[in-house]
Image (cartoon, rainbow, N blue to C red; front, side, top):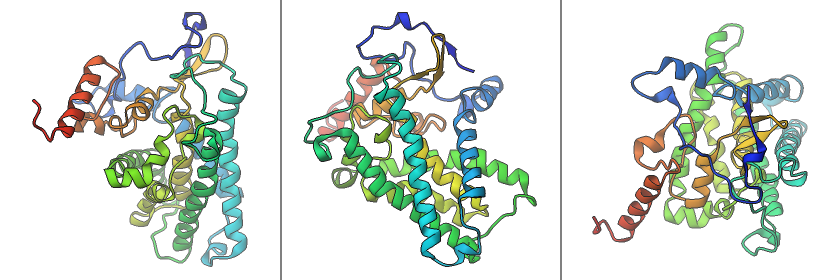
Length: 337
């Protein structure tokens, strides 16, 4: 389930990095590695466990107990809208707040397995209120939650009115499970890579994405600290449910998956220490390197698009040298060999 650890091996108060190089998931490696694929998908932690399954459970409870039904969603009623918005607000505060409280308020594991020994910035004019945490909370609650909720409300409204196809879970259980646990997470990674590369285009980076990249040393609240335009692009992946038959649960799951996943990936820690001898692998060093160097590791850990397109940084000196050569080539217009 989790790794045995020895906290005594760490240099407390210094930056931490994995001993080995970042490895791409074996799911898309050729030739096929059956054992590696099985472990990557069904192992713990892995593609399904714990995050996808946990988010699916939260989505199921949300749909069952907190989401207005199809009849209520046929119109944009203020009561239904308020339920969805306040549900999403409460969920993001609870989930992201839990990560932040344990790692940054209680500092339950200190700097053990923390990529940067420094904590969130204060008295820094780069951030709203000169405070990284409150800047991140502002963009998350003031922009992410309303835009996420708007996508959810409009998509549920479209399903309720028959504008997009609805699939019944009882009639097509295998399809619904595949869509929930495989198609949606994989599509989310591909969609994220595409829009992420787009907003690294210089004009969009300066106007939009630079807000997120102020977080050179991110924390859990940094994950959704984005410009509203970036939130519109980021949550637009739910339009997949406009293109293929889906259940209302799929809509809620996609949006919650997109909302919750950035917290652990921006936590700044490689492992979540559970006890003196046990820790849960988070392994988001690849995304930490993206925040540090900006032009590498645009995608997620499952679909290795960075590897295919030459933007992968595995933490090695060779990868770092290759990144510097690419940057030099861009600056000189390709005149340097």
